Image 1 (cartoon, rainbow, N blue to C red):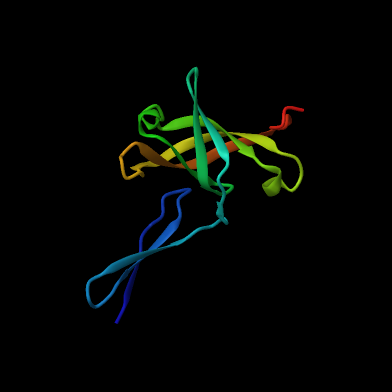
Image 2 (cartoon, one colour):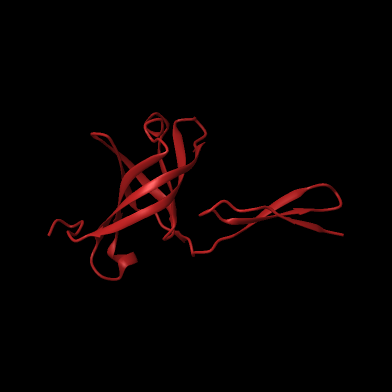
Length: 136
C-alpha cells in the first residue's frame, strides 16, 4: 500500500510529491510547470563590480542551475544578476545574450575535491540584449 502526501509548494517553486512505501523508503518526484532544457552555456554572474564566469547545467524560463568555483559562490547572495550567452543552436537564429535578475534557491558543493559549487536560482525577470555574442 502506498500513501501520497502532497507538500505545499512555495510560490515559484516546483510541486513535489513524497511517496511513503511499506519498507519506509521515501522518493521524491518533481512535477515542473515549465520545461527544463539541459544546456551547457556560458553564464556570467554580476556581483557588484565583479564578473564571475560560470556555465549552466539546465535552464527553463523560470529557473537555472549553474556551476562555478566554490570561492566565487560565496559572492552570490539572495538576489543577483547574471548574463547567459545563448548559442545559435538553441535560439535557432543568431547567438544572443540574456540579462537576468535571479533569486538564490540553493547552493551545493558539487565536485569531488570540494572546489566547485552548483547554484539553483529562480529567474525573476529577464531581457534579451540586442547585441550578438559574436560581437556584431
